[in-house]
Amino acid sequence: MEASSKAATEHVAFICRTCGVQYAPSMQPPERCPICEDERQYVGWNGQRWATMADLIAEGRRNHIAEEEPGLHAIDTRPAVAIGQRALLVQTPAGNVMWDCVTLIDDASVAAVRALGGLSAIAISHPHFYAANIAWSRAFGDCPVYIHAADRQWVQYPSPSVRHWEGTTREILPGITLINTGGHFEGSVALHWRAGCDGRGALLTGDTVTVAMDRRYVSFMYSYPNLIPLGEKSIARILDALRPLAYERVYGGWANRVVAVDGADAVERSAERYLRFIRES
Ligand SMILES: [Zn+2]
Ligand SMILES: [Zn+2]
Image (cartoon, rainbow, N blue to C red):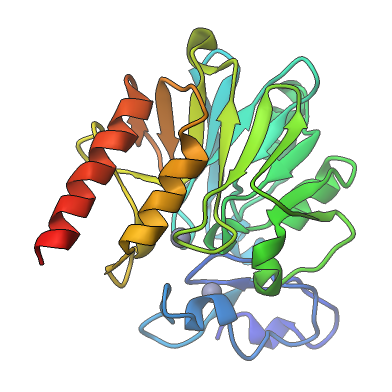
């Protein structure tokens, strides 16, 4: 545990090496990571390990920010940290939203996001992607971090910035709506960006609805690393939550995982295929 030797003199917000979630500051690394001990994740094969933000930066990791389409940038860390998800930055006339989060934050990435208009809010799909959401919020005026109330017990870095929202939908800025679908987590959320894809709409999903490798289909799992599928009721609930939305494009949680066209149709035919397989078994 390379980080523990530095922990004695000051409070440090330790980061789990396997899930990349940052914890509330403490003198010693936490004993356990409840997110990794949950059956949807796993404890690293060499045991629970912790890092500090300074460790990640010293290892040469940096954030790369690139435009995906007008008004949308992807932020990913190279070499990857933990699960390796990307964050997406949606620009709107009323302010910018960071969808999901990356663990690494440094001066260069804060400057780059500031040049794109900064952040008015952060919204998180589910606990695996909490990353360093409080550090990012703090860098942008303690902007609100929207986490669905059903996942309240998974928050590892409590802060007044966290907004536990309830219900099925919440418009957090004009044209930016969070949708609670359940499934992977009870509080799993997708983000609908009405102006995305030239006004046809875009759905940002993390792994609430994951974009498959062929980028024509999506899938739905209770656990991705441990390969535990969802049942029919969960799929029905996800479809019910998403059907009212118009969207052409689906942006998944990892670099270049995008269904570029017919996104809403891709979700429907993917659910049909999925249900066919689980019913046949
Ligand atoms: Zn963890
Ligand atoms: Zn996940």
